[in-house]
Amino acid sequence: MKVTRADVARLAGVSSATVSNVLNENNKVKEETAVRVRAAIKELDYRPDMIARSMVMKKTMQIGIVLENISNPFFGDIVRGFESAANEKGYFVNICTGFNKLDDYFDNFIIRRLDGVFVTAIPYKFKIDKLYHLVDKGIKVIVSGNVGADFRKVSSIENNHIEAMHIAMQYLYDLGHRDIAYLSGLGRNLPYDLRSIGYREMVEKLNLPCKDSLLFDGKFPYSTDMMDGFHYANELLDSGRKFTAVICVNDLMALGAMKALKARGLRIPEDVSVMGFDGISYGQYWEPTLTSMSMDKIQFGKKAFELLYTNMSRGSTGYFQNDLELVEGQSTAKCR
Image 1 (cartoon, rainbow, N blue to C red):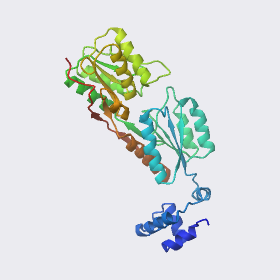
Image 2 (cartoon, one colour):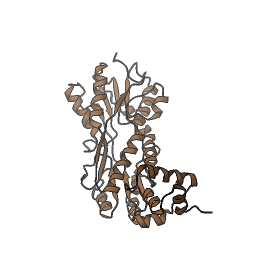
Image 3 (cartoon, rainbow, N blue to C red):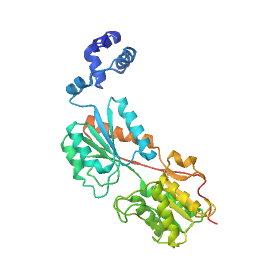
Image 4 (cartoon, rainbow, N blue to C red):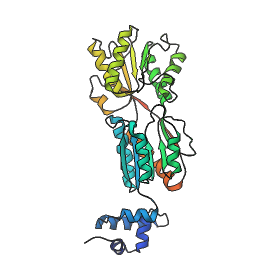
């Protein structure tokens, strides 16, 4: 027999209206009463009618997350954090991957009347007005990717890329490295490539002899996967330029670069030190283990939902900047 809202009310000793207020997270309900109601819901395994609930609340209780590549564990962990936080609030998460279908995704978000969307990164030449169009249609948006969006319209969550690169460069400099290469894989002078900006700033600050001759960028369409790291490391080796350390834009690129360097007879870290960004778990199972500017990706996803939820429930946008920390592996050592 189907459990009803009235059944929950009877077990909890409250009215059906109070059960509704708890389900809708109405702050008028005392916490001790809400605890009793939630316990009754769990005991009876009550499942509210989401269609009816969405009609009453004028919400679909569905949100979306847009990713470039779900195969990268960096994004996978962010999704886990975002989805777990969303599920706790009763939201179903639509996971969309691939920027080549971005316009179709946005159209579907509008058709399905999603309550909110997290766009985890922005493709090259993306028109920011497309985000504002979602907002105009009543969809709340949080974005990551340093796109320079109007924070009065959308929320934003970013990593402190420039500071993280400063820390990475200073770390290698303190190990005695002066010829430090950076494998970016992105286009030169892209406004959102803040790690390249941080690299150039430190090359100048530390007065490194390489200037920007050891900055290896990519060509459109930009890709920063493991095989790209393998490719750019070979390009660096083929250039004949002197280097004793390599920083890669992310850990996947760093793992690919390490494979290329070892294939060409270089020892890591005896001959060359290698660093990455993101702190994905793969790096701890590589040989040698990867030094990385790491972050709590699951917590990042949870924070993104928190900002989006605040926008959906209160109408206020927000901004959060996340710091990365140096996690030292065995892929870096003093320059010999």
